[in-house]
Length: 176
Image (cartoon, rainbow, N blue to C red; front, side):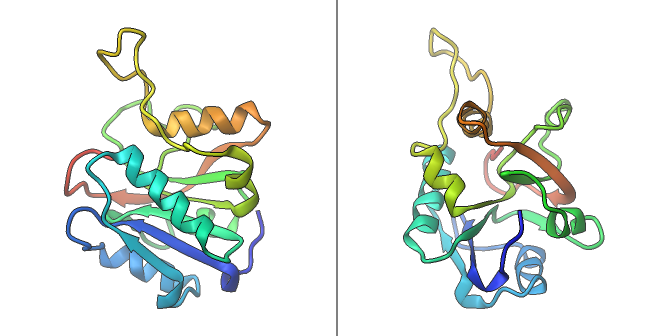
């Protein structure tokens, strides 16, 4: 998935206080993004709403390629270089600790701490991008919201997967 960094934006979920890990900002600046290419929002009471708002912000921009991140993800070189340098998938995430042992067992595994895709991918999937998959009785979660987006992508023939590694130090509540 080749992209021109000048035609990209990053959208960061910065719940609740608009604070962002310095390593994340260093990552975006290090790949050539300037401050005007980075957007922040603090929607986060519901992680699905927060991620859907991020997609909405991205699509309102004129950019053709998007990075999405939680404010507490910490990509550092050389661990994150495969995420930056390799072509990847239609939707590519970076691997990070999720607190769930088998989160990354499948090569198609995708989670939302730090991910990237093109405008064409988001436009093809259609909202809502993220929902909590629940059991039929509504009493428990079947998977994280990332699985919902991945399922929608797979249903229309898109690919998901992960490259590289980042630290994830959870500050406020659970992401995915």
